[in-house]
Amino acid sequence: MSKYIIPFLLLSAMIFSACNKEQHSTSGNNAVTPATNMQTADHKDQVLTPVGWVAKTQVHHIETGEYLSGEGNRLRRYDRNGKVLEDYGAMEQNARQTPFYPDNSKGKGVLPLGSGWITYTYWTNNSASAISYFNTNWTVPPAPAVNSGQTIFLFNGIQNSDHILQPVLQWGPSAAGGGAYWAIANWYVGNSAIYSNLIRVSPGTNLQGLMTLLSGGSSTGSYKSAFVGYSSIDLNVYNIPTLYWAAESLEAYGVATCSNYPNTTSTRLSGIDLRVGGVQAPLSWSVANAVTDCGQHANVVSQGTPNGIVDIYY
Image 1 (tube, one colour):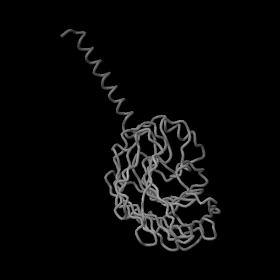
Image 2 (image 1 turned 135 degrees about the vertical axis):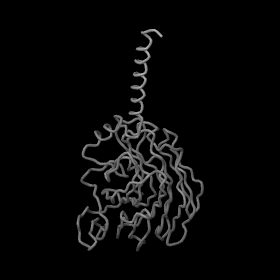
Image 3 (image 1 turned 180 degrees about the vertical axis):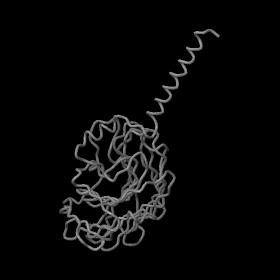
Image 4 (image 1 turned 90 degrees about the horizontal axis):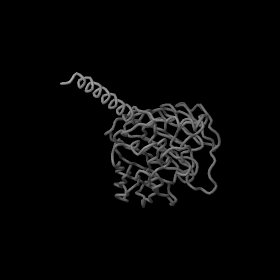
């Protein structure tokens, strides 16, 4: 073999190895592309919540054992002994009584792909009785193939014209914390955003997001949002305007490539059990595919309750 060939082969091997390493470093789950910087730079003094970017001063953490109350039409945080810890101000309701819903959650800034509520199903309770129970089961999906600092939210939720109550699975960062992993928390968000502790969960974990009416319901009600089996992050909210609009939703921010979504075709939301006044609701989902740049869409497999099924496609 020529004395010139051996050095050439060694040099070629070194170049190939370096290129291969570079590919792995930019496509692995710990890689961050400029999309992260674009997201945060465009939202100075704001943090990300399941209603989009909100001023830091309006976002608050609630500890285990504490609770919220809207008594006197002011939202306050209390300790377990009933002492007021914070007053978040008046609870203003939209005079048209339209739901506090996806259009309030649009992302801003220049990113390649859409932000906000991506695809979802929704149903309005028009009866005189309140939604008393809303359960959904799903499995934590695989991590995204590419991490660009994006945030993905998956949840079932109920809302009125001012706030939404929701048990939320998230990938990526939010006001509650997080990173390049899946985690769960309960949120009550609107003009103020309140979140529980965040608990990390692994792909393949079975989740059960459940909201229950504790009391009331005609014009005001008291509710609990929970992930069954994770009682330390239960969120109790008392004496708030009745929640009447239900949804199953995929929400996303900072998406730079379709590979920022979970590395699977879809996630199945099953065991959907929605009750009104303690009995099964006449549930019939409407579908909204607000962003379809990666083929995202929702498919109602079974309209019924208590065994309804909705598939969310990425």
